[in-house]
Length: 219
Ligand code: AP5
Image: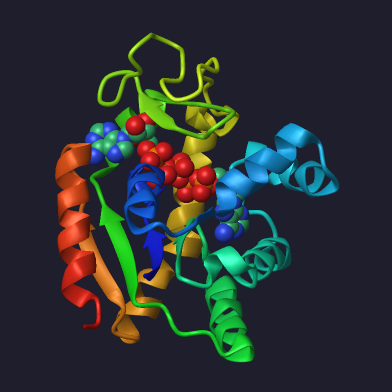
């Protein structure tokens, strides 16, 4: 399976990606997670990315294109992959198309666009908690950990993402509308876009996702 997840900040891409990647045994390539790890480790990439991420802005195209190129040419992506958060601009989408051509790789099968009304996005982001070690995503109401503030999988203390502050969320949503939403049309024109109504429970959205992914998978 080779899929791209598209959708506004907080729509639930990461939550669904973590489940689908395990079920399909394919790597989840999350540019946000890769960048957050680099920030945490204080690498040169992390130092460069942090000021953009803290401001709710996109990291420059050439930086994320380089990250994805390196990931997709690694052996663990040979069976397929799930791109969560990339591409995010038309420049990135065109570079990705070129990357596939250059490497003779098979094309993307599905671009899944998750859709949720704006007030629910705010509710989801304001209650999000995340494990800084294994990246598992929680929500104080809709996906709480068994013990408050502690990751069920690895026991680490859960954190709030710095870019989930309300003023940064507002910038991220605007950036999404201006720079990422045009990709819906980009992939619609190529016949790859599948819309998933994500205004439902995590379980229901996952069932909808599977129905869409299975329906378009070539036999
Ligand atoms: P990134 O980490 O990709 O953030 P994002 O796209 O803004 O998306 P989020 O991670 O905020 O939300 P999500 O849709 O994954 O929702 P989640 O599953 O967590 O990027 C962060 C930053 O990195 C960017 O701002 C940018 O600076 C940089 N970056 C990354 N990629 C880049 C790129 N390609 N180019 C340039 N810069 C890049 O769910 C949210 C909450 O809702 C959770 O609490 C969850 O438990 C809950 N939830 C999920 N589903 C449901 C449901 N169905 N019902 C109820 N609650 C739910």
